[in-house]
Image (tube, rainbow, N blue to C red; front, side, top):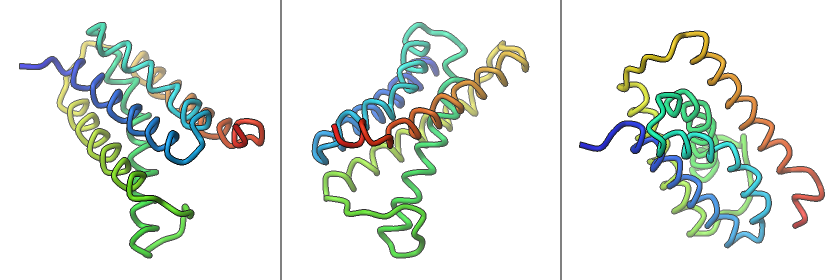
Length: 146
């Protein structure tokens, strides 16, 4: 049986690779590299078998799942939180990121850790802030044009 930390690491890695593919096909690889920087933390923690992987992954995966849902709602014509043109490869990658996020979140919810509530909350908050900051920074003019 695979350890929850490995599953979480692989889910974050799958999301990261799928988002790199999106960057490669959309001429925005630097933007996607910046956006995915926080995912490296739960990847490293997960492969090191750290229980903090759970708390580091959850905010990143929740944010990425929310973004994928907004894209799907836009593609279905149901909502316009996000807009743009999405190629078939980009659409396929939203499915990979969405599935990896759901699996990673589900694994995290089932995994009971010995991490105390203060340390867990601090890790959640830190990673949520890092993920939001990375997304915000990725849309600065310099990064958006490279």
